[in-house]
Amino acid sequence: MSQKPVVVYGVSGYTGRLICEYLREYQIPFIAAGRSKQRVQEAIDKIPGIETADYEIVEVEHSVAALTELFTGCQVVCNTVGPFDYYGEVVVEAAANSACHYMDTTGEQAFMLRVRDKFGAKFAEIGKILAPSTAYMYTPLDIAANIVLEDSSIDSIEAGCLAAGVPTYGSTQTIFSMFQAEHLYLENNQLLAWEKGRGFEMTVPGKMMTQLAHPWGGGSLPVWFEHDYRVHNVRQLTAFTNRPMFEQLIALQKHYEDNIKLLPKDDQAKALAEIADGMQPGMPPRENKLVHRTTDFVHGIGTGVRKTCVIHTAVPYQLTGVVQAALAMYLLQEAPKKTGFVSSCQAAGHEYMLGAIKKFLPIQVDVY
Ligand SMILES: NC(=O)c1ccc[n+]([C@@H]2O[C@H](COP(=O)([O-])OP(=O)(O)OC[C@H]3O[C@@H](n4cnc5c(N)ncnc54)[C@H](OP(=O)(O)O)[C@@H]3O)[C@@H](O)[C@H]2O)c1
Image 1 (cartoon, rainbow, N blue to C red):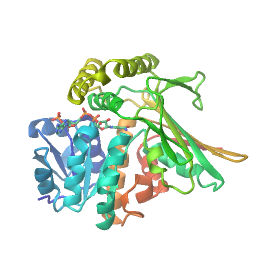
Image 2 (cartoon, protein in one colour):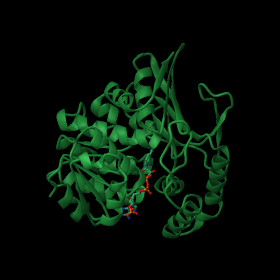
Image 3 (cartoon, rainbow, N blue to C red):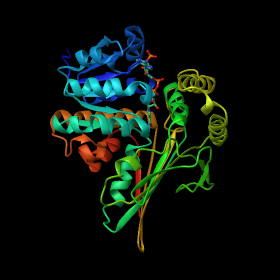
C-alpha cells in the first residue's frame, strides 16, 4: 500500500527517472518503482538534488495483483514501462483497481484504443483519468491543436513533429513493435490506415529543407479527436533530423511487411525486438538543449480559413518529465475537467500544460 501520492513505474528507464526529477522540482512526494530495486536505485542516484526529494524506492513484480497492492492508497500513477502494447494493460488494470489517476508516455494507437474500450468507462465511473500519451510527440501537438481550434470554423488538422535526438532503448523497441499494428489517420470521421513502409516529405516551419517523415504509429491526435464534434480530419507525421535513420526505419518496415509479418505472432515480436536491439542496445546520454531541439506544428484547416500554431522547444525526453509531473501536480490539487479516457489537455486544459512547459524549458509559440 502506497504512503505517497504518486507512483512512478519504470524509474530505472530513461524517462521514468526524468519524471522523478520534475516531481522533485514540484516538491511532490513519490514512490520510485521498478522490477529491480538496484536498477531503480542507480537511476535515482543520478538525479541532481535528489537528497531534497521525499521518495521511497519499491521493487515490484509486473503483475496486476502486485501493482494493485502498490498503487492502493496513492492518487496518481505515472507509467513508463513500454512497449505498452506488451506491458501497459496490466498497469492500467491495476490503476483502475486502486482507483488512481493513470498516465503514461505511449503513442501506440492499438494500445490506446484497446484500453479506451476496456477501461475508459470504469475510469469515468470512479472520477479518475486514463491519460495515455502524456509525453513529447503528443502533448505539444495536442496543445497546438487546441490553440488552432479556438477558431471554430476549423475542422481539419495536419500535425507534424520534428525532433533532433536519439530514441532510447524503450522508444526503439516501441517503434518496431508498432509495425504489427495499423497506423491510423482520421478522414471524414473514420479511422483509416496509412500505407505501410512509406515516408513523406514534410515542410517544417523554420527549416530550409524538407524532412523525411513517417506516421510513427499514427500518433495520438487521430485518437483524441476521433469523437470530437469539431474535427473531421486529422493526420499526424513524425520526423527526426537524422534522415538516414528514417530511411532505415522505412526500409525495415517494408522488410517487416514482406518477411516478418508471415511469421507466428510471438516470432514476429522476437524478430522486431532483435532489430531494435541492433539499432539502440543501450541508454543514450542525457539530452542537450543546444543539440536536441524540436519543432511541433499544427495546421488548422477550414473552408476559406487557415490557422497555424508552431511550438519550438528542446530536450523532448525532459519535456516528457515536465508534462507528467505537471499533470500529477494538477490532479493532486484539482478535479480533472473531464474524466475517463482523456488527453492531458482535456484533463487539465491546454493553457495549463503549455504554462508548465514554459516554466522549465525555452519555448517559442507562433500562431498565425
Ligand atoms: N512519446 C514520447 O515522446 C516518449 C517519450 C519518452 C518515452 N516514451 C515511451 O516510454 C517507454 C519507455 O521509454 P524509455 O525511454 O524510458 O525506455 P527505457 O529507458 O528502455 O526504460 C524502459 C523501462 O521499462 C522497464 N521495463 C521494460 N520491460 C519491463 C517488464 N517486462 N517489466 C517491468 N518493467 C519493464 C525497464 O526496466 P528495467 O530497467 O528493469 O529493464 C525500464 O524501467 C517507451 O515505450 C517509449 O516509447 C515515449
